[in-house]
Amino acid sequence: MKGFLIRLLRQPAGAIGALMLLVVVALALGAHWLYPGDPWAMVADPNLPPFSPDYPFGTDMLGRDVTAGVVHGARVSPLIGIVATAVAVIVGTVLGAVAGYTGGWVDDAIMRFTEIFQTIPGFLLALLMVAIFGPSIYSIVGAIGVISWPSVARLVRAEFLSLRTRDFVKAAVLGGQSSTRIVFRQILPNTLSPIVVAASLMMATAILLESSISFLGLGDRNMITWGFMIGAGRTTLLQSWWLSAVPGIAIFITVLGLNLLGDALNQALSPRRREGGNA
Image (cartoon, rainbow, N blue to C red; front, side, top):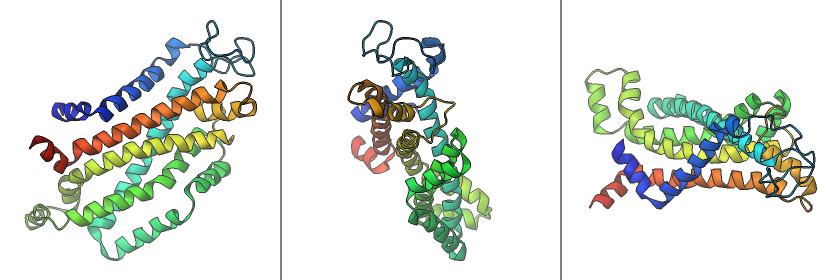
């Protein structure tokens, strides 16, 4: 584990991405200490510009502190991305593993079921689900998870199709190991590298999807998010540009950090690149 972290952080992309995400995590963990009040509270005059005394990022049209909103939004937007990605990875891994290992009509049925979701525009399906079930953090997480799992299923299926014909799997079959043990002890651990890389990139996409949904007014009104802040500030974009720019920069930093870290993970987990680097 220590060697893996060293390989990861030695790469400029890994170090920069990890630093960006550490800043976001620190803001999320320290939100209640940095800004203990309600981020929805009207605390000053409306539309104070950035770098005003006590309000580094100014205030919005209702006098709410933009900095407090960004800091508290660091707890919600990335959390939605993490949970939605976890849902997608679990569902996609289970279905992809069953399809790839079993094959035959089971594989065909799961793949046809997967294609149904891939033929529907993902963002429109997410909007429809949130509108039907009502704007809430649960419906948003569920909607993002539903449109994200097919890509994971296809990735895991391809890995299982490749690995199930390897010698170590055949030896496990001849040794009398059960299918469940072969899947969880022999094949699945060897598919974790591409799954981890895909999950890091999927998390960035999930944050962007949540921001887009909230921007359109379908976010959870009980929780402040970066997407909601951008949407709320778009009506006064020419006069108070910071209302949308500041949370937009927060999204940019988080997504860029995840993409850089995902690229570094791909480099660090790739056996061929490790061997090339050690040569």
